Structure formats: structure tokens, C-alpha cells
Image (cartoon, rainbow over all chains, first blue to last red; front, side, top):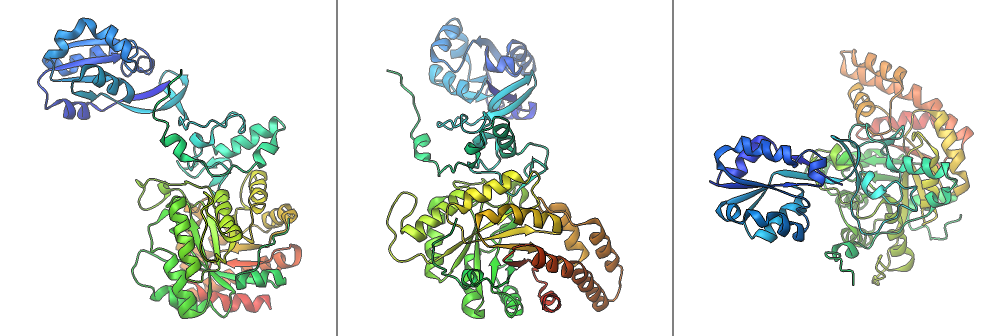
Length: 212
Length: 309
């Protein structure tokens, strides 16, 4: 799931201030689960912004252009009346709403990461979408994402009792976790494997995926 | 595994000769001047084979270490170990700096990943880590042994450099650290220098564990110039803690109002601690030498060496 958090009330006030009329779009998927851009949050935002708001809509998946077309169909008049659209969705949702409407879009949320959910309100950063997954080699624990240095051949000298120097030794060292997991699985040969430098051009050039 | 690379540096020549060697440490700071570094290098020159020049330690933005690494060799005649971290530059900048270092006659590089940017004095910086320290060793090996960069592009001229790595015997758990050292040594490492050590048992355990890799290892020590430094070290250096007794001794020294007497007491405490420590290292381990991180505390070399004689 894409994990988001709401921008502060002050920041929302600042970015919406130049616009007289606003339309608010919520997200029926990830931002609903995060409780940052679901129906309740859209209603609360509309209440806070008061008379400026000319309409609101929930889009089931604002990251999907087709769903935008379907769910915003009945809001054309309000959208054309609005000076800007405040989107309570991840950065992809904001951009897709902008692409679909051609209007000025404002992000109401900050996109944090692709996360694992422990419970609503408690999420962990787990995937950096690097485009070259090696979880088969690392005991199902991602060093690109969970090591603060994204080391492929860790651990570094900054681990103390299995904790990472980044964040004052509160977070686990990903490479100690990987070592423990591979040891449990009797697969330490994978730990010893040298992983050469990555070809970052592959990710840089991976701006679209087309299944034929 | 036996490294077939020639000994390009005096440090590696000495290590391969089997002599017990000392290396020192120089730390460029946030300054445009080199006077202090040069004075420090001159003061330690009689005692050490080479001196490391640190590269933005703890992510502090200091003078580019290549410049003092070169100037110290030229002006003082003391060989340097050019420390390089991969935190601040991608593979293009690393290759670029290694070529420059080779041109300037640098013969040792200590390949590090580097303390994370969030520990530093510019916490908002973007950490690079295009290569980790193992991949960095792999890069330098390619340049030195094959005359190419990572993409296989040919290098004109020789890159006559020996490669060092750091190790942390304080690591807990130790096994992944040891396995990592083995992984790196297999990529072409000429010497290892450890993080600063206070616990002789950990030194023994670690050196015993890495003996099978057959790579010379210098044990790091950090003589404590003052209580303030000891306290800072204890609190802020990842993976290092100063023994409570030693810290307490240092605290007592601090109470001495007379500056000369206080310095004398600090020196005594250091000698009392490190003399038996070094003796034990020499007697019971296969350490190739001691890496003395007496940064701006060169006066300790003479009494320390006297105890080693």
C-alpha cells in the first residue's frame, strides 16, 4: 500500500490560500486505508476550508485515469467552477487527477513510502520500487529499502547490537536481520555472495511498463 | 586467500615483511589551512610507517582529504593512507578521485562506506552510496589490477595503489562482520585497520576469526587526549564505548587545575591502559600492527613506543 500522511493545517492553508474556489478529491483505496484521504477526511477538509469548497468527490482509485473518468463524470460542472483541485491521495493520484482534468492540482497529502501495515496508523517502509528485486537472496528482507545506506553487501560498521546508527539505534540493522534469517534457513552461502554494483540506468530508464 | 597484487606502498611492503608496524591518523577539519595537519604529520613521522587522512568523518564537511594526503607526502615525506568514503560520491566521482590520487603518488586507499549523513553537520544532505564498501574495493581492484573502471573502460597509465578496509571487532553480533570481511578480502584487500578497540578479549576473538582470510590486520587504538574527547567518543562514535574505569580515570585527571600536570596525568592514564593492551596484542594475536588514532595527540607516541620496545 502507498502510505500517506496529511499535510499540516497550516500548509494546507498556505497552498490553498491563493485560490477562491476549491474542489476536493479523495482516494477510495490507499488513502482511505491510511485514514488520510477517505470519505471522512474529505468531509473534514471541506468543513475546514468552508465556503471556498464548491464540491467534493471520492475516486475509488485516483491513480487510475479510467477510474477518474468514471468517478468524476458527474462532477464536471463543479470541477470547471473550481480554481484548483485539492487531492487527498498519493503523488500518483495528484498527478493523474491533474492529467485527467487539466486543472490546477494541489497535494493535500505527503507520500511517505510503499508500506507494510501492522495496524491502521502503524506502517513500515518496506519497498523502494528499485526495479530489480533480490528478496530471494536476502531472506525476504530488503536491504535496498531497510538499510539506511542501501548496502548490497552489508552490514556496515554502524550497527550496534543489531541496531542501526541512523535513528539513534532504534531501528534494526537490515543486514543483521538478513544474516539471522539466512542462518535460520541454513542459507548463509547467500549472505557470503558478493553483489556487484547495480546498473542504475535500468531503473532510470524504467519510466513506463507496457505489457503487450 | 593470498593477494597477488604487488606492494605499491611502503605500508604494504612493511606489512608483508612481517614487521610489526604503526600507522597514525590525520584529520583535516573545516578549514582552508594545512598548518596543523602538517605539524601533526611531522610530529608523528618518526613513529609511524604511514598516516591515514580521514575523509569527512562522522559526515562532517571538512577539507577534501586528497589534498592533505598529497601535501603531507610531499612536504613531510610521510606516506599517507587516503581514506575515501562512498557516501559523498558516485562511481564516476570515485574513479575520478582515484585517478587523481594515483597521479599524485598516493599509494594506499582505505575504502569505506562512511558514517551516515544524518550523523553529520549537514544532516539534510543526500547520501550517495552508489557503491557500498565491498563494491568500492571491487572498483579499486579493477582499476589497479585490470586497468579498467566498472564499466570496463580502459584507464591510461598505472594505478599503483594498495587497498585497505576497516573492520569493527566491537560488532555485536560479530559473525556477520567477520563474514563481510571475508567477502571483501576475496575482492582484493591488502590490509585491514580496525575500529578503535579497548577490549582485548574482543581483539583476540576477532583476530582469531579473521586469521583464515590471511590478510594483515592493524588493531586500532585511540589514546584519549582529554576527558572531553573520551566522553565524546564514548557517546557519539558508532559502535565504540570507552570502558567505565578508564572514563572515570580521565574524569579525575580533568580535575587537576595545572595544565602541564593535567596533561601529564592524561598521558600516564593512557600509557597505563594501552601499554598492557599493546603487549597483549603482540603476545597473543597475529596482529600486523597498531593503528594509533592519536589525532592531534602526537606527544603520546614517544612514551607509547618506549613501552613497546
